[in-house]
Amino acid sequence: MAILGTYIFDKIEGETIDELYERKIETAYYMIDNIHLASYVGIGDGTVLNVNVSIFKNKDDRDKRDFNVDTLLANENFLFEIEKDINVGKVWDFCYLKIKDELKINMELKLLQYEENDELLEKYVINMEDV
Image 1 (tube, rainbow, N blue to C red):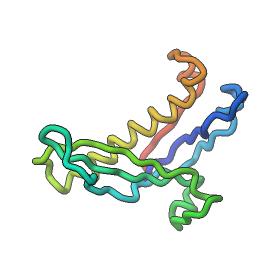
Image 2: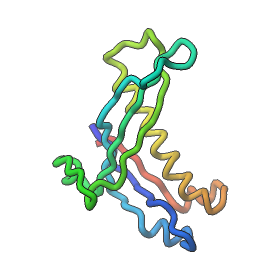
Image 3: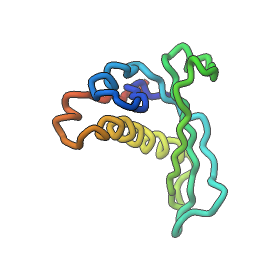
Image 4: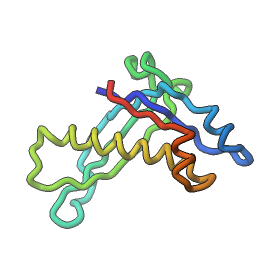
């Protein structure tokens, strides 16, 4: 399972929000590659997971897992704390749902660096869907 969604590039100095949004990729593929225990024990009673997500330009590149510079847009790492008593079979589902939310927030933050308001996120839509 992967996520099909909008990918917003990092802002180039002097670029307007319209120019940034125009450069977006609407059909980027986000895929969890690895889930590892972090190198340290978690905060409190939980355990920290390091989740690696690869972001590809399109589905073909994702399916081939072609990690060359022309097809791989980014590699993102996320840290999530899980409870010690979580069912091991649920770890992937937990990470997937958290990643989907975090990715959308990250893309929105790239737009909100221009100005912070709700109308902005209505005009410049970020899509994330399961595929």
